[in-house]
Length: 376
Image (cartoon, helix red, strand yellow):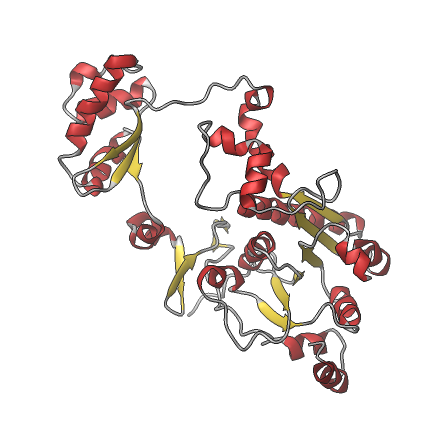
């Protein structure tokens, strides 16, 4: 007998996604992965194109409704959709939606149970609130960029503030849902991408006083190239792991030299480099990983798809032949999983317009009229 499908913890929570940029898309993706019904609003028409490339993994598992929010009837439709939602997520310039006639100040009066999540670069208040920027802007402003690497200039090749801020927004939404269950009232959630990055400095507040001592490169903490051209990480930065590493590499004379400096450190690094260059990376990881030597693979994204640990955990899932990251939050109890890594393909633009409008109370004639007017 087949087991019942896993019901996500956010099943029944209806999320209206008004966002146009990755912070909002990451946030609502996480909510969808946890079972929420996420409906994206996107401008019509979209030429019948499905999202590909960078956008493919961010719109999976969601519904799509087309709506021209600048159309004279846009706010009318938006109000009715908001009235049928539990959560609204937007990433407009602070104050912009209020100026257009339907922002949080309007929703709070009309729909007091609605949870309104605003994601922006610098937050809803402050002298920088309406300034534009990108991921690098906020990561740099926050103090996180130089905490990651004090040697300038450099910039990360992957976004940092965007997914981090999105996770904060999702946590805020989950918290607001719990609070609403107690008070019956919604609220506005104000998430700043820059603030989210500064929060990461909580574990090293010396960064905020300018007295932080950054972790340098040493023989026991660096990347080493292996025989196949791939790299491994070595983080044997304390006596126990350093001893395990040296013994396994056949270098017992180095066991007591855990923290070498100067020419000594350079000489030890060369000795380790010579040893690591004799085998492929995977062999070193298989040999050294299980014995507590703090060694791991330096993977590119494509490597994770075939990685045995990633495959065992279902770290990625395949949609229409494309590998995408799976829901990283796994809930379970003694009876089994309470969350799932399953997902659905990105919707066609506007695929759910009619059914969503009908569920919000629009009649067939009203929907037809909205279509003919170009509002949806």
